[in-house]
Image (cartoon, rainbow, N blue to C red; front, side):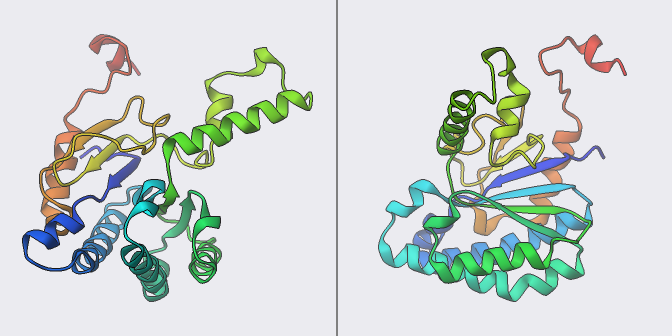
Amino acid sequence: MKLPRHLAIIMDGNGRWAKDRRHSRVYGHLRGAKIAKTVIEDCARRKIPFLTLFAFSTENWFRPLEEVAFLMHLLQRQLRRETQTLMKNDIRFQYIGDLERLPPEVRAVVLETVETTADNKGMVLTFALSYGGRQEITAMARELVRQVKNGLLEEEDVDEALVSGLLASSFLPDPDLIIRTSGESRLSNFFLWQSAYSEIEFEAKPWPDFEVNDLERILTAFSQRERRFGRTSEQALRP
């Protein structure tokens, strides 16, 4: 099976899943964390080189304070608990997003996990934390202006490769496949530049119901897709 080099997942539906079962949204997030652990381990087993999980968006800061506080606590707890799992599976942990907005104790654990796993050679697991695609592009544009203003760049130097290289996520290849759960059919400010030629799968199941079998089904369908990148089928088949 031809697997994506970079798989990205928008883990959506925890709160609605819990509400449908007359539980608090917190219960949904706890269940979602368990699913994330299972999917991470399965992707590492499949030797997918890059996995990015959209864990917390810039817009999520507008949620109720109690929910945001719990999500920060959950992130801190899970990273501490699962560091040994990351080491055992040779997974290197990274992040994208505005880490400065996270509480200091959470930020410290994120950076500690990055440092602890830095020498691992297996899958690169990236958490998008306080991340937004528009915000990432805006920061890139500011850096571009700064470099031009300081005489480091000329107008003719600016091309797609330069723009990609100035993005905070430049250490990642563009995602080959993006999965969004819970039946929503939008990217919600995720990887807006990088998703230009991504295959996108909108999965009806909410994230807490997502299983390894669902991932297998989606990956199988992905392996059968013809990815032409604007070319004809005949051109795409050429070496």
